[in-house]
Length: 142
Image (cartoon, rainbow, N blue to C red; front, side, top):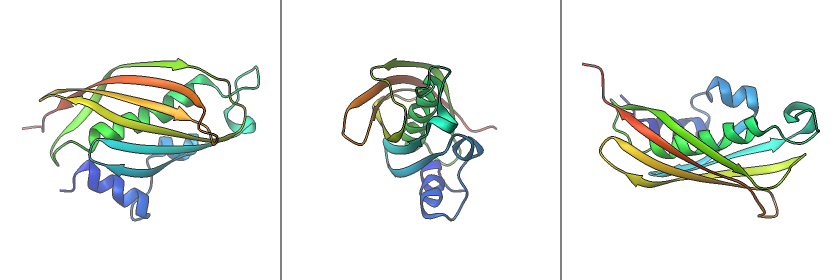
């Protein structure tokens, strides 16, 4: 059975389709290595805006959660899974349109618990949001 890291690499190469949420929101896995994942999104007012015309905060949560989750998943064995216990995000700058990149990094990986962070930047490198997450490793079903 392939690891989640192997499956993610197959998504990047196009061998397997992205998950439904990626297609719905419009984000793309750009790269993945053990403990690190990068997700991008072309933010578009027509698809992603809140009532004020700026990018909806939930979309930023989606791309940071994806980057952090994939970063943590890349550290798991083939018979393991995980769930998010907690996610916190700080919105630092409003966005209407443009390319956003969320970079997820595992900061601490214990036997069962991991602490992960993600920065979201725009095409100029400006920090748009910063998020942290706590993940729980789920052992294989026996």
